[in-house]
Image 1 (cartoon, rainbow, N blue to C red):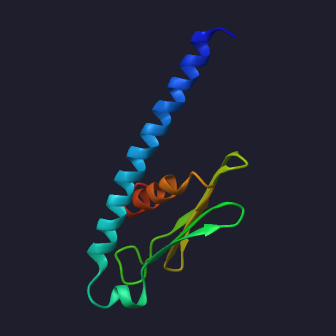
Image 2: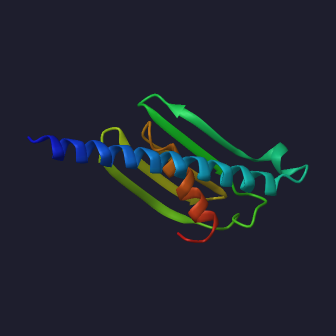
Length: 121
């Protein structure tokens, strides 16, 4: 292999990593805003959201939709598997949005929730 293709691949990985960091920071800020907008003195005491680590390894995201404009919204189960450590599952029903993903998919999971919340999915 020549130096140029390896350099191009390295450059591509660096761009993807930088993009994922921006998406993750933006998504996290938007998730915080969504959460805060639903805190009314009651909702956050009974409901809320949780992010937990999984032992396979990966992440789990759960958002309680009860008491929000999304309470009756549904999202059919969606699953994407790119590699053993690059996967994403999401669904919403019965007043709960759930997502799970690989160790580097947390930003994407949050993004899926936000697109669902905006009515884009």
